[in-house]
Length: 242
Length: 223
Ligand SMILES: Nc1ncnc2c1ncn2[C@@H]1O[C@H](COP(=O)(O)OP(=O)(O)O)[C@@H](O)[C@H]1O
Ligand SMILES: [Mg+2]
Image (spheres, each protein chain N blue to C red):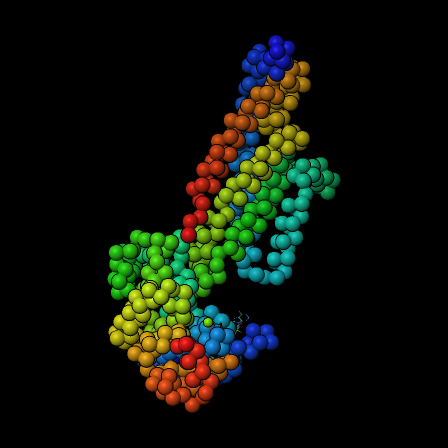
């Protein structure tokens, strides 16, 4: 297992947002997470690299208990790539600067080597020619691909995507999904929160449906999308298509 | 007109006291630079300390900053210079003016830096931390560079306003421009040295004001 979440609870004050989540993700697997807004999908992802502090439960990444006292969380985080809905590129750095910052400051690579790795990551997402461009000079789709390159450059063992295409104009979605599909084909382990059902049907090994802080049902995409056990899921999927 | 010129632009008097005014000019420059450096550096350190969000420490910082932003600079200078010696703490006029103005500039700078840090979207922290940067690295390489850009125009204006307060040093016998001009005036019974003093201030601060203007356009934030 690359990622093994067990009995995960998370509360914000009195509000219990995650009520006991179990989720296992094997190497090279692509797990798709869907569910209504507010069901806790983002919180789940953010607990996996402790951007949110879980209230209880255990999370293992590559076998390492990331909640253990004394764990080097920064070392754990660089093994977990994260892509955000709002890209969160650094506006004061150009594309290559965005991609190489952690290479230089966390992995302590020399500038030449970091630039070299950074360029290869940018080429992988199809933006080799935009290395010198600042985020405000890039389209939303290009920004998100730079954000993906920023995570990829650290050679993570798993990538978490939190609605990577939700903030994009429809015509820019395809480019980002193409990059994700290519990552999947090259064997990256991925957890994707998204409502791109067509992408899920084609690329996901497993779909997890979350509702009110619990996993309501999970299974292969055909099953969840076509004949889920819960009427709730049918309704939800109909609402997305309609 | 002749009388006016005789009174305010008396070349003889001006020529006689120009060296004194020049002496004052350099004292003002030194005092202003010392205030700018100490004030901004301290302000930045306070804002950074505040970012650790230690409750007791933050209450202390906020109290310090609010008091110093409320006190008129002259009052603070007079307390340092005239009142502290009664409890055995003695300092020169230069030091008391420097301390007072630095502390006040530090307080305004702290608030400006803090506002700048808060203005950086939370997602910047998250992106940085998710790639393994430590809190301090994220602060240093991601948040501060953005905060400083937001900060520079208001900080420049505030710095100019407070460094002009170096003239208050005249009250505690700091030999800066105003003090020299005033004492020349009282020796000569002619206000021309005051005119000369005003010109010295203009020569010193007009370029600074222009610099502030340039900085404001240069760092206008494009997204
Ligand atoms: N930092 C926070 N503080 C308080 N409540 C939060 C916080 N983050 C998320 N929540 C709440 O947790 C619930 C789940 O949020 P989220 O994980 O973002 O859901 P989803 O991503 O599925 O839409 C929502 O009710 C949201 O308001
Ligand atoms: Mg969400």
